[in-house]
Image (cartoon, helix red, strand yellow):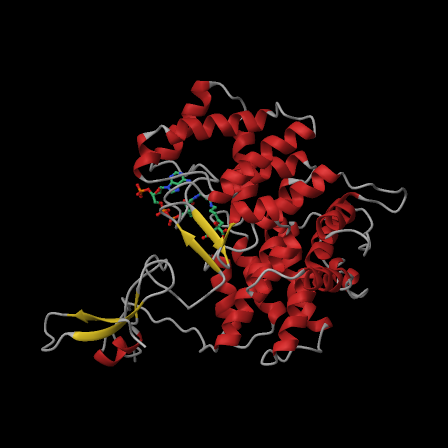
Length: 427
Ligand code: SDX
């Protein structure tokens, strides 16, 4: 039911086109343009800058004020008071769990962390030096070959089983990607460990000796998982939704999301930030200024990775929490005077005082500090985006489930055609 009407007058049309306008609980109103095709027009919005692709209740971003809400709860309050498993429940179900619901959900996830033994053979088809994101993308796509049951996506309980399987198995498969890359044996998950502890255990433990998970590292990893869990209709989530709109099975949809996340303009930026900080090398004023000047130069492809965002025209609230976590973790791990952290902080300071960045409202985003923490925890840069994908799987499956629950038509955009008009094949 429309909240109000929009009139679209186009030269050459006798009557203006009337379009319904809907209001959400927060954010801009939307103009429903679905009937525009009846008047012979498409809308044109490459990059979907002004396009709402769906109706959703999961996450809200106020880009102007740097606000991120998950089911209405601000990300900084969740980061301070909740944990990743509780956030998974909230994103999937819409409300915070009772103590009983939390215990049951946590137990269910722990009991689904193991993967089919045959999957270990699948890894062996990759070269050892394959990028872990390439391996993860392939392995997740292959999961649908292992889980034939519960793939009736029209059945809510089947969707819930697939969602829990994906959330539970991502840490195991992510750690397997790392172990395969470094030539160490895979570690089986342990049901007595929390989600973040288990991931660190499978990453850094080995069969030859006991491995105690550092509680500081586990808390930092859980915080990183929380800050990457969901972010509205970003590129990879939109990819999952589009794949899901065809009725593809959830494992194939998540594999498509992983592929989209890998790009350096999206989830690949955290790895690119560390490569950029390595390239900058020293924290001297003139050296950092030189790189800031390069980022402003249109003829130079260099960009400040971890800076800028399509939606945030203010600080990314996740970057603020990540920066605080960075200071805490590095201090507690005894690496407080990390040279890369010093360069990152100086780079942020110089950029935020520079007219180019101020004018374009470019601020640090979630990726700017996350890599420094991950590196301090001993995670290699080629695993950074894998960890982003591990965390974002919760957001992806929540949106996939919401889309199917609400009912979806196959996503099929049109185009502004600029090619040849019809012509005959030469005799
Ligand atoms: C993520 O969508 C999400 O929510 C994503 C994410 C999530 O949680 O899912 O938040 C995760 O992907 C964060 C973004 C990570 N990417 C990076 O850090 C890569 C560096 N950032 C840029 O590539 C860029 O800022 C984007 C891709 C993030 C945003 O691109 P837009 O919105 O298309 O903006 P744009 O490229 O059109 O830039 C607008 C202007 C341009 O200058 P002008 O043409 O106006 O002169 O700002 C400039 C750009 O050149 N600009 C930058 C810059 N980012 C934008 N200049 C230098 N360095 C940068 N980082």
